[in-house]
Every structure is written in C-alpha cells, then in structure tokens.
Image (cartoon, rainbow, N blue to C red; front, side, top):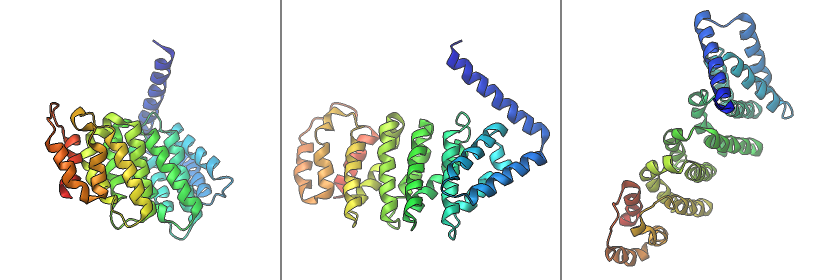
Length: 280
C-alpha cells in the first residue's frame, strides 16, 4: 500500500476510534467540558494578536475529540452566537477565525457539513461597519470555497445565489460573484450541473444599479459561459452576453442564431444561456 494511502487510512481509523469512544462514553468528561468552555471564552474575548492562535487551539481540540465534539461541547452554538453578536465586533471576528481554523483542519472533510452553513453569515458580514471584519469574512468564504469537497458545490451555490438577491447589499453581491467565479474555476464538472440555476440570477445582476456589481456580474457571466462546450453556439456567446446589457442588439443576435445549424445536442446549461436573450 502506498505511504499516502496508508497514512489516510490510519487517520480514518483514529477518527473512527474517537467517535466510537464518544458513543460508548455517552457524555463528555468534566475535564474536556471545562477545556472547551475555556477555549470558547478565550476566543470570544481574544485580541487581534491572539485570535488566530486560540482558534487553532479550538480546531486542535475538535480534531482530538472527534467531529461530534462540535455539538457535544456546544462549540457550534457558541460560534453561531458570536457571529450574530451585533454589539461586539471582536466576538464576530473571533467566530470567523474559528470557522477558518475548522475549515483548515476539517478532519478529512467530516466537519464540512457543520461549517458550510456559516457561508451565509460571511456574505451578510460584507455589510458590516468594521473593515477588518468584512475582509476576514470575505477571506473565510473564499477559503471555504477552496477547501470544501467539490461535490458540495451544489450545496454552496444556492447559498451564494441568495447573496445576489435584490435586497442584498452591494458588497454582499460582489463577494457572491467572486465565489461563483472561484467555484466555476475550481470545480468545473460540478459547477456545470448548476449553470441553469446560476445564469438567470447573474443576468439580473448585470442590470444592477451599482456599476461595480454590473461590471462584476458581466465578467462572471463570461467566466461561467466558458464551461459551455457546445461548439455550435460557442462563437455566439460573447454576442449573447452583450445582448443582456444592450437589448437593442437582440434582433441581430437572434438572426445569427437562427441561421445556425445545430449539430451537437443542446443540453440544459447551453440552453440556459439563451433564456436571458429571449427575455430581452
């Protein structure tokens, strides 16, 4: 057995033993409970200088006690409480640091289902008054998109699309578009499947009142459309995207498409590109 595979199997066996031990014990020990409480208290009140190291301690604690410790010791509840603490920017930033540490030490991906829900909070925090917190939340969201299992793309994308709603702040929309770019680039195969859901939302943002959002949405649309592999329509994609911003070009583009003989099968992602054009 190759060394890397053997190492992964060993880690998996260790984690299984941890989970079995927790199940047998039924409840955490007083020492572990006290340790978790101390770490959470320290992290919530941490200074900028100490925040990252304490978050790493917390992640190490979870790694040592198994993924179930996230709920068993109230760690998830504490992070959720802090990230929604409107009166304490430091606590919010500490919660973000905790999720980053857990993302980077995800115990072979087992922590992902527990930390993915925080993506919505990262998007909301783009409207926060604290510049440092906005930056930390944006970096945390990008890190999550980079580290998470590619097969979770279909779970992440709907959350990201919610960040493009009309009621969302423009800063939230900007991060959402960046995340779509990252996911489309990193997880091409998995992202291809959700293109029909993404195109209509991004096309709406191409008409946003905020110029920055409008430009970013147009760029994102172009990036997403590069995943389309239909050779019959490939050369018309720039024109189709252009029609969304300039409806006066619609008749000419439709005429060009009408004169095209389609040889390849037109799948859902390819067809979804036409929807904004037809709406115009």
